[in-house]
Image (tube, rainbow, N blue to C red; front, side, top):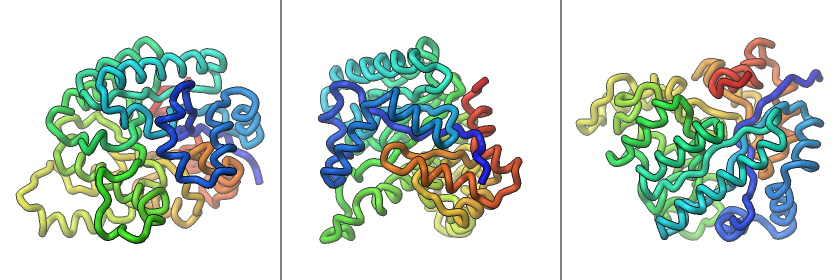
Length: 321
């Protein structure tokens, strides 16, 4: 099995002082595994780079592990902590600029403040976009006040990675089944629904240059494209968008392979979206780099398609030299 060059874009770290925020993610994992994850989240040198080298990953775009400042209730604190986090990441990137890039942490509690920090991170720190962990205190980004945020993303020509987190409140159908509420099922449903809210609210019509990235093979959306068109034609409830729903998924919405190491699923996603809308990722350190790398290296794909997924799409989207 020949290893191909790879770029991975859902790869997490934890900034100094962010341990309390990160408990919402790590506390869901058993203690032994959590200790190992915390060690890897804090490392930028020995462990991370050696794993990248071993598995042919040339470059990663790093993001603060969730939920970050999005659970912070005090706006001023969220603004300050986001800035601290981004400055911390910029320092780590500067130590390995050929191997690391960054996604901004943003105070999404206030769209105007999120815009300011996004612009600073892209123009001054050289970050490649932003990653946010779903809603912020139950507010979704299809709300009209976030148009200023989408406009800035389009202007800067950088993507937003929409990462999962818990639902704002627990739906009744999860009661008695906590195993369904997190990464096994609930996070994907939450994130896919958020993306559809953005789509059906016309965000991509008003800002056609916006790119939204979904991990975990698109949180299931690629495999429902046909049905979205079929049922929206009947049950639109007066909602109007410029194109069929399926046409936004694979253009404005693109996906990564993070956390889904299934060749049939990968081929289906490429078949639905096209090879230029699927990007390799690991979801480090929550998933196995070895497993993800072996999966993509051994996948029975046309070599040019595999190159697009492994690194060429990322080079194009993030303007990497």
